Amino acid sequence: MRILIVEDEEDIARSIAAAVERHGYIADIAHDGEEAHFLGFTEDYDAVILDLGLPRRDGLSVLRDWRQEARLFPVLVLTARDSWQDKVEGIDAGADDYLAKPFEMPELLARLRAIIRRHRGLGSARLSFGPLEVDTRHAQALLSGQPIPLTPLEFRLLNYLAHKQGEPAARSELLEHIYGTEAERDLNALDALITRLRRKIGSGIIRNRRGHGYYLASVDDEAPASTPPATRATRKGTHEA
Image (cartoon, rainbow, N blue to C red; front, side):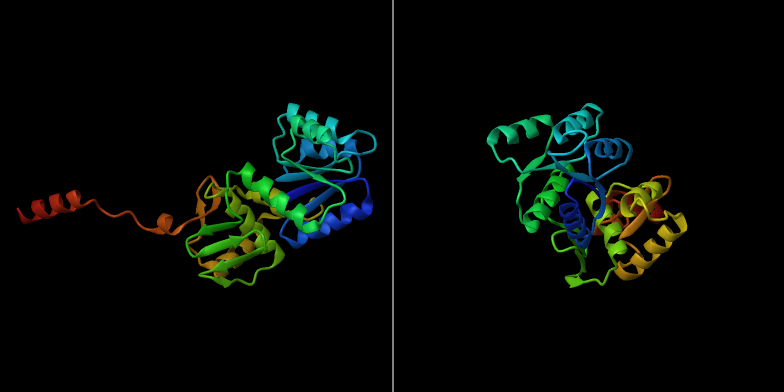
């Protein structure tokens, strides 16, 4: 999942980027309002962490423009100002949550996870698909209760599919959301990544719906459709006749 961090203080931006990447996200950084507006308009982010006090353009005007342009990704606003008026103004501009500086990194990460869950209609930090559980809080996956050893890239793919909640994701969409802007996006590498993941979690959980893309299946999805009892009885009666 891709996160845009908009922060003009380079040390803070790097610290946030390192933290979110440790928890299974990809981080892009913008240091001013103009760059932030451009990236938010042209790239498909899963969430944005937006400082309000930015050079060239302030964060609130950037946020208002995004919303007017129907850019609906969730936004966590950061600001050194902690008055209730500033919070109201930020939320009215389209922010999903608000965090005052200075802040503790675990709280920022918790709020980031929460706005992503709310945006996707999810109620828990643990996402389950049959025996597979994706723990977004601790950035790990479990199979039948046992942790699965995953590379950061494997977890990013699994995490993104888990947040889709069974909705298929095309290969082009997966490339957009699990690789950074500087990474080479290769369909063959993506296919190899999915093959490795299937070996680790079982071939039946990651499914491919032809023409639509990949998705995570629950146990119920895997069960073959059974013949209705009435139909079986009819067939039996016809045979015996």
